[in-house]
Every structure is written in C-alpha cells, then in structure tokens.
Length: 326
Image (cartoon, rainbow, N blue to C red; front, side, top):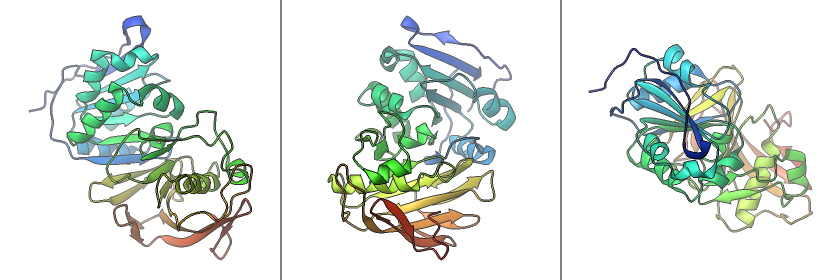
C-alpha cells in the first residue's frame, strides 16, 4: 500500500564533494506502487500538463524522480502540487562525475516509480552517464516496468542513436551542406528503451527548423553502417508523445498545431560524404497532429499527413503540394 504524506519538504542536500544537489518534495520514504511501462517523448519548451499526468498515472502515484545536469527543482512543486497524484517528487542535479557512483543517487533513481530526464545539454548526459552505474540504474527502472520520459536534451538520449551535440548544436543548413561537419556528433550504445531500436529523436522541431538536420542524422546512421534502416522522430515544442509498450502513440500538445514527425529511411544515401552537400532521396514522413494515430512498432498511422522528403545537393524538397517540409 502506498504511504501518503501531507508534508512538503523542499531542500537541497549537497553530496560528497558537492557532486550533486538533491531536492525532495513530499514523502521522503520510499514507496512501491504498481506501475505500467511506457515512454514519454517531450519536444521541449513548456511541458504539457496532460502528458505529465499521463505519466504519473502510469507510475501508480509513486515516487517521481527527475534527473538533470543543470538547473534546480523547477519540476517539484508543479508536479507535486499543481498536477498532483504523486507520493513525492525528487530532483537530482549532477554536478560532477562523482555523483555517478554515489550510493544515495543510484538508489534514488532505482526506487523511482517514474523517471524523467530534464532538458539542458545532452552532451552532459552522454559524457557523464554513459557506461556508468547511472546508465545501469536507468535500465533498472526500465526493467521493473516503470515509465521513463525526457524532454529536449532528455528526449535526445532516449533513442538507440542520439545526437550528442558534443561540439555544440548544428542547424539544418549546416548539416545538409556537410553531414560530416564536426558539429554532427552522433552517439550510440547508451540508453536502450523499448520501441526505440534503430531510432534517433529531435526536439523543438518545427520552431527551430530541425527537419533538415534530422534527415542528415539519418543519412549518417545508414551511411556509417550503424543500421541498414533508420527511423527518426521529431517532436514540436509544447508537445509530447505517450508511447505504450504495444507501440500505440498518444499525442499531447498545448498548441492546436503541435505535431510529431516520423521519418523512415529508404536505403543508402545517394551522396553522403565529408565536405559535400547531402543527396538523399525518398525519405518517408508521417506527420501526426490533431486526432491522428500512430504506432511505433508497425510504423503506421491513420489520419496523419503522409509525404516524402528528398535532400538534393543540400536542399530539402517535399512531395507536399505546397512544398512544405513540415
């Protein structure tokens, strides 16, 4: 039975060598609730209340843990008080590598009934957590069947492949002109999430015009031999996807125009070389918006917009009547 508490505790506990900050709100004792495995893929900017409520419901109202490498406890009061339905919200901010071996940090993650990776800089997550006990703890939460989610940088690391942004962000123009520019830093063999095999994600999608760079990422994955087929998911700001274990996707958005884009590669790129404009033709796109449906396992949907994109000499071309790539 879940232990309830009406006491709200909010404080920062500095770990050994100031390696992390810990902010708990609610009942600090560990509880165990019945959870339902799922993923929440959020596109950044303002979080969607309904999406977080969906994730909380999947957690059975247990302990909701937020992990990040910057910021403070911005999720705590919002999740605990405004949305409600959780036993506690605990935020851990990683300051140094030493936090990755801290027993309290690792146990707090493992005890989570819901685990959420906040925004920030995904290179911090890849460089600090990959290959460490933190990665193992995240997979432990996955294996026990608890929901896992991420937004912005947190979303970027949930696919089998990740845009690591090791040398800073890249825009679509630069990535299409040279898919091997030093700013296109891709990573693999980090987190292994259900239904995210052969997949790379991107956030802030239409607002920051990231379609071109996602196409370039996919071209690199196939060209470099990481996978014979690759899949891309782009999520708009103020929009999130709730993904069930059977692949069913629910779209949540604060905007009527909030959409998600599901890209699939057609084979090997025609031209994908260093210092050369990308040519990659016939990439299929499914745009999910409004009441449209989609299933990640079958990669099929109903009610969305279906079209193809081609990169030709570093420029995107669309099969849509108006030529829009979105």
